[in-house]
Amino acid sequence: MPDRMIDSRMNAVLMLRLSFVLSLSALLASLAGGCAASHHPTVQGRLGTPASSDDMLRVINEPGPIVFEKVLAAHWTVIRSGLINLDHPNAVAANLEDGDEPIEIYFYVLRHPKFGTFIVDSGVESGFRTPESSQHVSWLVGWAMKADQVDVQITTAEWLAAQPEPLAGVFITHLHMDHVMGLPDVPTGTPVYAGPGETEASQVLNAFTRGTIDRMLSTTSALNEWPFAEDPASRFAGVLDIFGDGSVWAIHVPGHTPGSTAFVVRTPQGPHLLVGDATHTRWGWENGVEPGSFSHNPPQSAVSLKTLLDLSAQVPEMKVHPGHQSLEDDSLASEF
Image 1 (cartoon, rainbow, N blue to C red):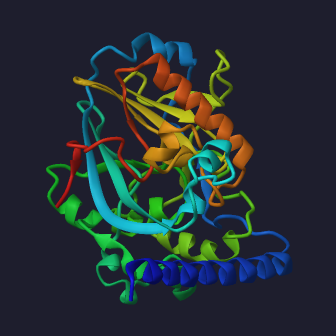
Image 2: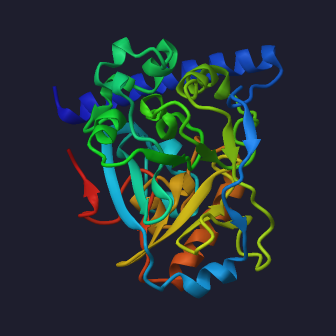
């Protein structure tokens, strides 16, 4: 059978899966009167000081103290229409069509000389080595999202076992499954930080993902919400100096989810921008196209992506990391 015909049939099966899940989710949501992303408790975080983006820009090109590592946890494929807004004029002009898009699941290691080791996002938990035995992912979510096709390179537990010091905390860009699916491997009591309103946002898909998200968070104490305040310079929805020394900055970029957070990290070699899922793909970043159906508020997502693109244009030396692909053959991404 020709490869094109096989690919077409596989895409059709995937679209049927998602169509079924969306229809079921809509029914459940209507019966439940709306579905929050998670029931997990939250508290106001004490880490991070609200600041102006002007403060960040004043120091962004100065060498910083953070030892940075990008870890490739897994390969995966998901539908392109979720990752990229295919109705965007740039996508239409490029004749982009729906289908499977190869992606990666990353987490990022930040080693601070005073405050210890933190990770941004959480990688992949040990259960994904044998997904059929995972106690955290519901069968419906696993079936719809093709969890059996997550090609694990290293689990979070395996990575942690090789570290010389305990983990000081986890910074989550947002609460979608592919960013919290490593949390069950994180030691109980490790502080976890996320943007404001992440657990409360109501979306149709939450009707079937909420249970899985809650189980992923079950070994986590209350989520610490970043204390964002309005950016005095009006570039972003909010900016925080996380450690108070200008080494790591959190940027509120709502749209993909209400609390979506990007990070600027200053290293001895120069700054890095971790955009989270403000854009998932290399194509989305390079063509200024926001995510598609996976986003909570697509118009707001487009605005937030524009703010990050503007920041990148102001700091052309900064290395940029989209949520699920790299902009180039990335020698920083550690494979195991």
